[in-house]
Length: 400
Image (tube, rainbow, N blue to C red; front, side):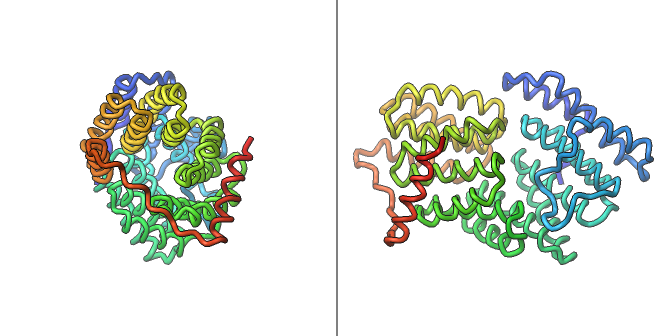
């Protein structure tokens, strides 16, 4: 397991990283240092006193009554002091993750894991799950795998299906990042079997399986699945806009770039998380190229460069750079396309994103060939699927 840095070491690492990326985090970094130090202090020895818990609660007041994104889908919010403060620390850690400050987030949640080691199984297991997500975003796949395996083993021992579903989602996402799509699909399906219908793990499994359907060009299935996910999500929630993005990708693959662009812009206008914006911009640049909007491609490229710096997420950066390279090639900007492809491949090579390395090499070989590119495999569509596809695209076109 990866050893966490001390709060001061984590602060220095993230401050240096933000400076290198040209991102000004202002007073937030000092606030997060205080949070990490508070978590580390509470986890430092014997059971924390009421006064220490009260001091940490006051420090975390800015996060209000928010809950972290990963909770137990079948249980209410905890009321016992340690589980409650553990959730508040994890909410703070998520703010650090959003800003790309993964060392501080890892140090904070590692302290939460120590703090909750003797708490109830749900609280301790959720902390381990969260630590795995941070490790995965830091490209420490071994540490992430260890966390997810611990979650699944403990949830199985406790016969806790919703917790097991969360662990299988983690395994699926890790397999996806490693380029092992069959393993990712198997884990998503296990998560779906264990998940509470409509809960967080359930919707993540739906989203993952929809993405796999898109990759296989099973567009009718992906579209039907995507609108179910969209309609089941809360209005104005990030999940709804993620579903909208995926639906727009389906429209783009199906040959409807105008509704796709409308969907991408609708989501971009409403989401401010850098990592998600980067992903959405990757869709928008492809739609702009398909529409031959050369100036729009240039504008989106600038936004992508900013989002890469803000997100500090190399997996998404490599993916979007490859997508941008493809868009530039489509509008015949060959020199820029090859430079962007090389930049994306370099990131993929550095972090062992094997699928993206293979994709970059395939794109380069395809561009160098005098033989025209093979057409995308089309899905055979029944009249019902054709009708569903048309209705789904019309819903995108109607967005305001």
